Length: 150
Image 1: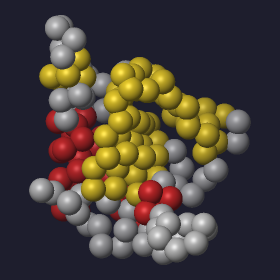
Image 2 (image 1 turned 90 degrees about the horizontal axis):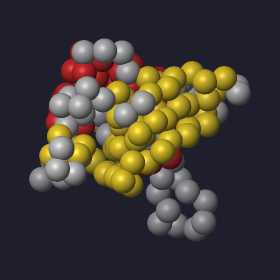
Image 3 (image 1 turned 60 degrees about the vertical axis):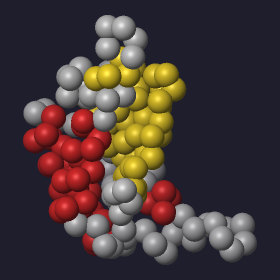
Image 4 (image 1 turned 120 degrees about the vertical axis):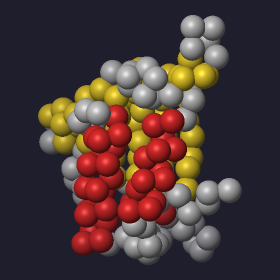
């Protein structure tokens, strides 16, 4: 599972010209799922994301987590994170999990993050044509791969 995490001061996702979800201070997470992902990836990645100390403390130092600042999450599925660009100019998405595997994992990730943060997170709709807008605060953008836990 790959997550691109962006610290945002505000963000929203539109589907069919309508806002589906919206957050204020928090994290926008673009999530790519592979067939090998399971509950251990969900648990590890959720903990890592919510405990990352990437929010400023009273001295302007990134020393607080999402949980510390009572931040929100906007989680967006994005199979293109698993694009292979090694051959030619057209990316291959063969590594990305098929919807019948990815959708249940995505839904488990939503449920797990809801429990960890203690409130409902914002989401897109798996497979929909989405327009994601955010103000990247910092900017702070971090890439985490649950298969690379070194």
